[in-house]
Amino acid sequence: MNEIIVLGKLVRFQHEILDVAVSNIRDTLWVVPTQHLFLIRQIDVVPPLMLGSNPNYSGGGSGVGYPRLSTLCFDRGHKPHNFPLNLTLLHEIGHILDEHYGALVNLPREHQATLRAIGIPAGARTHGDGEHYAIAYQQVIVGTASAAVRTAVFASRPFEGVDTIHR
Figure 1 (tube, one colour):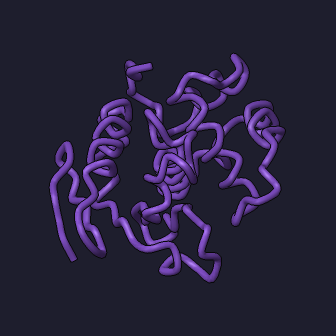
Figure 2 (cartoon, one colour):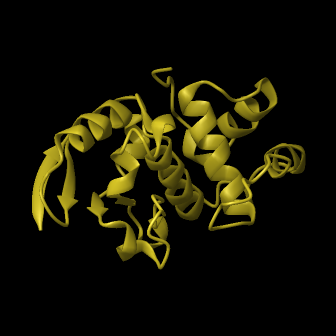
């Protein structure tokens, strides 16, 4: 295991430290609200098969309380949408926030309905309410969320006391 600190977060690599991953993680964490970063104790970068049986899976595995990212997350050919910001990492942070704060279930009904209307991609590994919040969080941070989704996410517990986001 090789370790490096990126913007105050421990990043552990199962194998060699990948410069493209360090740069991508740094750029992504830079836009995450500081209050949200406090919940991320570490990020693990592992070979794809350590996250399940699909060798093409590049996802997250945030169910352990911190993001676990496949090395495929940092392959521009496999995941071009993860550049310049890593959407997979932002999505996993959304899962962690939802789990920690009960973000979706503690929203008023109209905001819950807005987020539950977000489509979950057919190839997604997880489904249900947590997936809707993670997608919405990712969209808000990168600036692609609709006005209704932004309003709902900004009304959630993780955004209480958060003045600004970088995008």
